[in-house]
Image (cartoon, rainbow, N blue to C red; front, side, top):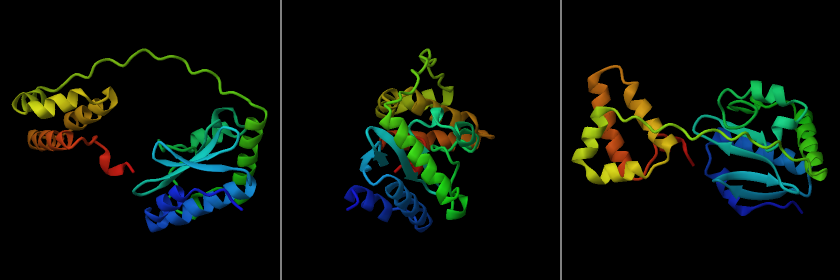
Length: 202
């Protein structure tokens, strides 16, 4: 009997109709290639483990993603990376079943990922990157937080990456009117504990 996690059943059932087709297909192929796979939810999306982390999939508003934990040392690493298109996975933004490679190819990748785990092949150590520079706040946002201390305190508690998302969004505004509207929206979302891209997160 397949090792299926009810949490992944729930994740798929809550996804958009186009995503259900893609996620169910990928899930089927993973189990077909790796009968001993273990399903789990990590970081809010489905993962498939086999003697360690192996691959994962996720659904977003307009696309799905599928990727391998050790993609960097797989034979088709260059092809996967080239298809990334800033998507979370390694097959680009999957918007329909037609965007998936042939089943035979996906199964071959899964079996390769299994062998890497069977052989206990490790990923190369990541190079340590220097800490990111502090986020420079636009004056208009500083003034807003001066007026709303709660929003300012909550903003300070965000990670640098989430702060930068808000700041870049405000700075990209073409007009002062748009900039002011984005500042108001930022204050509102920050108070609610939301990140800039909360609508696209599951």
